[in-house]
Length: 308
Image (tube, rainbow, N blue to C red; front, side, top):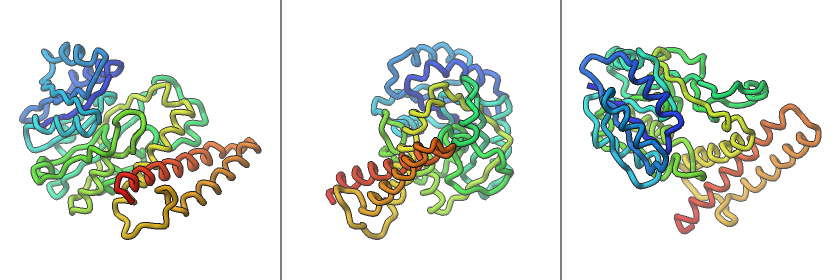
C-alpha cells in the first residue's frame, strides 16, 4: 500500500488537470490512496475533490490552520502503507509515476528519502530572458535536468515530487509549521528544511529521474515582480536555516546583523549601476538584492520573536 499526499489551498485552477492525470496512473502493487488536505480553500476546491472521489481512491481532510505544513501534518493522520509520496495541487504525474517510485524504493533499501524529476508545464511560453537568467530551481521548483540516478543531497529533494519511508514519521519527525507557504509573506523551503534535518539525523537521500511530474507554471510567475518577491522568500528560508544553526549572535541593529546592512548597501549600489547602464545582468543584481532583503526580514522576525 502506498499513500500520496497533496495539500491544497484554492487549487481549483489546476486540480482538475492534476486529478485527470491521477486517473491515468498505473496502480502499484498493493494499491494506493490519495489524501487531499484542504487548507482553508474558499474557491471550488471542495466541489472538485468531491467530483473526482468516485473515480479515485481519495480521502479528504480539512485543516483550518493556514499553512501548507499544517495541512501536511493533518494528512499524515490518514496514511496507509510503508511509503508516503508528497506532491502539489499543480503537479501532474506521468502514468508510470507510482510504479517507478515503488520500484526504486525496493531497489534502494538503505535509503529513506527519495527525490524525483520535476519538469515544467508552462501556461504561456516564457520570454528568452527567463531561460537566460532565472534559477528554475529556486523560482519554479524544477529539478536540474542533469541530475542522474544515485545518492543526492537532501536539499535537492523538493515537494512537487518527493517520497519517504513511513518509519521517518513514526520516529516523530515532522514538517515545521513556522516555514513554508502560509499567505503572501513567509520563509520558503519547508521541504528543504525538513529534508536537511533528516539528513543531519542520518537518513539518506536518493534521486531517480524516472518518475516524472509536470509542474504547472502560471503566466503570472513569469512577471519580474513575482520573481523578485520569490527572491525575498527564498532569502528568508535560506537565512532561517542559518539562524537556527548559528553558535553565537552577531552585533545587531534593530534585529538585523550589522554586516547585512553593509551587504545590502553594497548590493543596492551594484544593482543601481547595472540598471543605469542597462546591463544585461541587472536582473541577477536585483535578485541578489532582494535575497539579502529577505535575509534581513527573517533576521528581524527571528530576533524579535526570541526577545533578543
